[in-house]
Image (cartoon, rainbow, N blue to C red; front, side, top):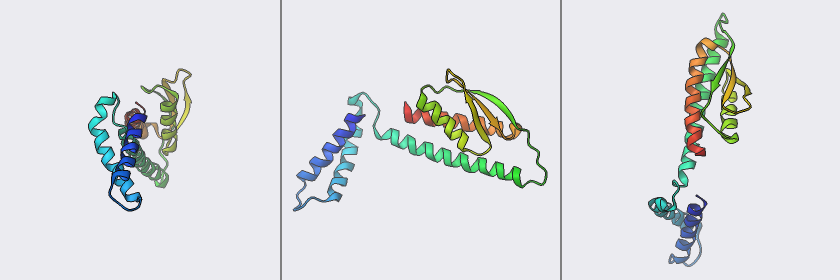
Length: 160
């Protein structure tokens, strides 16, 4: 992937130098970079890797998924807090993950801890399971499992 980026920068610089202008302009460099993106996208199969901007788009997708899950879990916690009677059943459950590697596991644990109503208590030494404390096991466990599946898929899109 670094080779694709370097080729794209080379195309942008070449585009800027070849363009028929009296002085160097930033807009010409940006236009060359955009043309380079198209050329590298058409040639990315020859590099043996996936297109280098696909990780960037996957990261944007992960941020969007996190934002949606954050708003949904915040609404759930607010509903519990503002209800006249508190009817929650806190609990701990184990979740086995398909993610491997320190970055993937840490990212999932942080994203889950940042969403209201859940906290990662412990990660197993092998890194294949989490112990998660949920504010309301009955209601939020289903929502947490759905969120964890979305997070795992998005994290794998960024890292693999």
